[in-house]
Length: 236
Image (cartoon, rainbow, N blue to C red; front, side, top):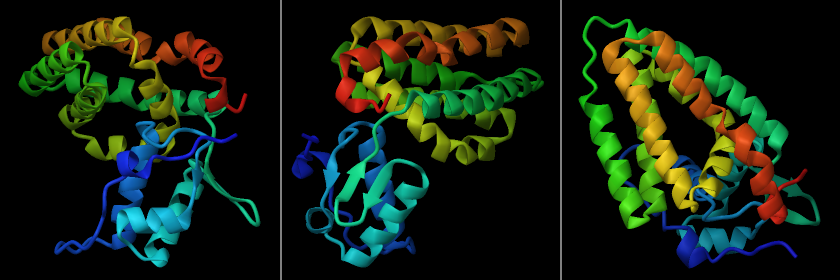
């Protein structure tokens, strides 16, 4: 049996916005965030009627948002069967890891080459991660983790590269989020982040790239174990 959604906990109303942002875009962002952070788990069935009611939107923008989720490989729609969140495929995760590593190692090297390297924002995000770890606030930790990696791209001068890889990275993000309940993982992640920040501040490209590559390569280590612990979330 596929898991069902506790809509009240998983989603927030989208409603209308005075800002000129399409309703379908806001619906997409709410759904994609819920899926990537596992508030809506892999394999969950999605009811258009329930989603429209929970999000306070009509069927048209909802269907547009779901179509985008299908394009990103997060949702499948089968006629006469229904709509569901796709299971995690380690092959897709590996593709995303390769893209992320290729882009982020390059961004890191460029950031290190900058004549002035203000790592204040990165240090602040490390503090946020430590606080989230102490409070066991996994959502806050995940957000601070994402913000730290994004800041590396900002420092490199290529923030658009971070944006460009987001659709593919969604597959990787679900696996990353699934690993977070383990306290030891949070501690290790913070230590690895700190080593990367230290390397940027020192302009040490070789050491930093080594630390960052090891950090990004974590999926090779914990992917199979997570699949064994949560077989219902994986397709292979």
